[in-house]
Length: 277
Image 1: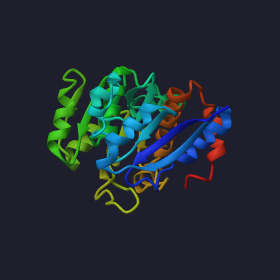
Image 2 (image 1 turned 90 degrees about the vertical axis):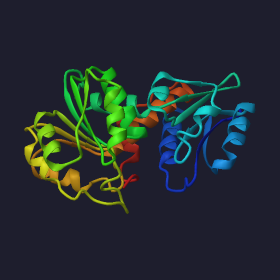
Image 3 (image 1 turned 120 degrees about the vertical axis):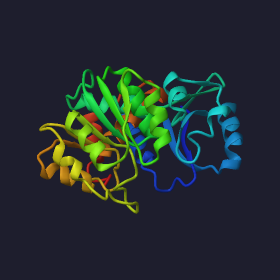
C-alpha cells in the first residue's frame, strides 16, 4: 500500500516538534502515512500549494511565516480559520485545499481533558495574533462568561475585543488593569512570546498576587516547558498548564482531519515523555 504524504511547511522549520508528534501518532494508529518537513520560502508558497493539490499529498501543517499568507491560495476556509485570519492545517480533498485552524479547538480540548470546562468562566487573555485570536474565538464558542483581552500593542487587542462586545473587554497592558482583571478571573492565558527561550521575560509578575485561589495559569510557551510564569504561579499554589498540552491537542486535531483517526492522548503523552524538553 502506498503511503499518503503529509508535510510541515514553513521557513525555518528545523526547530519544529511536529515531525516528532505526528510520527508518534502515525505509529500509535498504524495508518499508512508519512510526515515530512519542507522548507518553503514565501516566494515558493503558491507553487507548493499547487504541487500538493496535484496529487499524492493528503494535507500539510503550516507554520511561520505562511499562516496568513496562505489564505488567498486556498479553495476554502473553515469558519474558525476565517474568523482568526490564520491557518495551521490544510487538508487536500478532491484536488481542493481546505484551510483550518486547530489552535482554538485544541486549546478547549486541552482544558476539558483536565476537567476545566470553559462555560461560565471569566478569562484573562494576554496576547493577540494567530493563537490568541483563535483561542478567544474558541472560548467564546465554548460559552465563557467574559474575556479580558490585553496586549502590548493596543490596536490588535481592541480589534479582537470588538468582535465580541457582549463577552470581551479590552484592558490596557499595565500592572494595575491586569491585576484588577486577574482578581476576577478563573483562567489566565499567556499567548505571547514572553518567557520563550531567547525572548524577553515578564518584567513584573506581581499580578499573580491578585489571582483568586484556584485560578488556572496556562502558558502557551512550551520551550522551556517550565517558564518563569509557571514557576511563580506554582509557588503561589495555583494550578498550571504548560504549552505542551496545546501543542499535543492541536496536533491531534490536525491528525484526525488528515487521517480520520482519533488519538489516545494519555498514550501519546506517555510516548513523548522526556522527548519534548
